[in-house]
Length: 256
Ligand SMILES: Nc1ncnc2c1ncn2[C@@H]1O[C@H](COP(=O)(O)OP(=O)(O)O)[C@@H](O)[C@H]1O
Ligand SMILES: [Mg+2]
Image 1 (cartoon, helix red, strand yellow):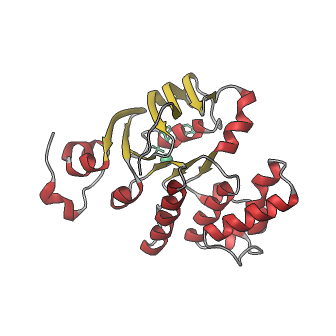
Image 2 (cartoon, protein in one colour):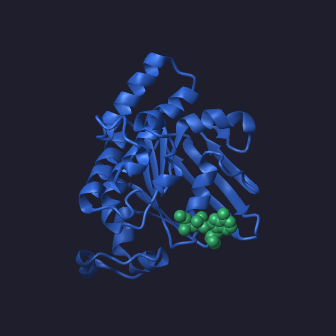
């Protein structure tokens, strides 16, 4: 899966951010992601994963430090349109993402904002809905979909923008195993086309299926970068990320 070459597609340097109430959520985050990589971000609740993601398409602006996407600084207002067309953001809660009265309008919203022609919009919407397996539900109200369908609808809204980078916040949380399988397949197909994925997840079972490398995050910092193999076989790294090893991994665990 890994096709790391030359310049990073995403580079975060010493990123710091405090919320208006004074909570320091990011305390100097640095990492690089290369084109075509699929990266998992792991860490306990409150580690700063969602806050970090909000910086990757300029929804939050760094208090200090720097976020560069495909060579463009995300804190420059002039770059935001470009960055938002390249970084597809899938929120943890699809209800934060879906707000139109029909699935068609929902998926067409982004391409309409890009100012694309009518025919291109129709093509993009049809293609995105087909990719996520929701063709035929165009007229349905997104809030009437099941959670698994809502997650796929949210992915379709960003896929219709034809992004280079997909950022997903806990994309398989609270889904049944079949719905998890569908999301994994979607991510694999996106990645197989040379696109880049960054996903926050607590689901250790899907790691070998979706990730080339893992960043462990704790208290507003990335504390280590590991291969999936190293992470799954190392008791200390797992506990740092607040992860419980699957029973089948227990005989193979070592300590650092
Ligand atoms: N809107 C907000 N206002 C104030 N504090 C927040 C807000 N959102 C998150 N936080 C705080 O920022 C820290 C990081 O949260 P978050 O990025 O949601 O972590 P994670 O996604 O890893 O669970 C936590 O201490 C959380 O309480
Ligand atoms: Mg979160």
